[in-house]
Length: 155
Image (cartoon, rainbow, N blue to C red; front, top):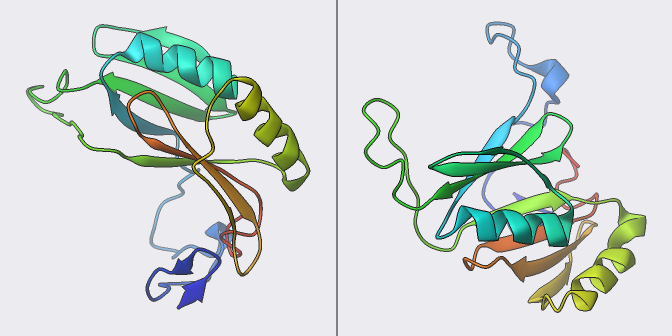
């Protein structure tokens, strides 16, 4: 199925969260997501300075930043959680994360990134609607700012 983000495979369902299977207990959304970084303090400064995220927890293995209401981005020090006894996890490579922005704020975001010297790698207008701005964080992760329309059934 072709969607706003190009050909991404066959859609599994077009139901909204309110249409979930009755046998599945309630799920309120994605609470936290993680990136694995060389220096969590440096990354937290970047996400604060560029996107306005506030640091809410600092620990030996991670720094947590508040993205929005009920959303947290965990900035884990690479390999610091790889050998936990029960809940080991780690990641490597250049990962991707996208943040939703209102369409009428797109120009303001372009200006903000330019004023901070953050190069925009691509500005993509999607065929079904919406626009994405792509740039990199200090670890090379691909950060996307996306307006409504890129996932028509979702945002």
